[in-house]
Length: 158
Image (cartoon, rainbow, N blue to C red):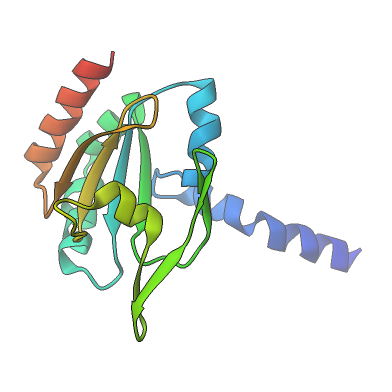
């Protein structure tokens, strides 16, 4: 009985972590959610070492007005551009691409967020309801800039 309970708790940890969460979903969830309720998607490409990414997390994504706007009309995906996790997105498998010793980038981050052949962090990618890239902005965005982006995308996608 104890083993069964422990097994159940271990399997449930990702659900609890997501429920406590940061308001974001994974790419794996996105396809099925779009089939149920199509909405534009905001993808935040970041890395753990990026101080500007952390700054956006703190000053933009933690803001109550931003959270309210995001929850009302968008899906939000936070994605570590250096993740080594294999991801299925739109029927295609994407993985990590090493570029040196202890360096590399996730191929999906590179596909979605590259501008001029270069991927930098942070990058905001906007996907329409069909999961097509309609906007890419690399670099730090302030709260007013981000809210304006949400307003423009929301107006165009309705």
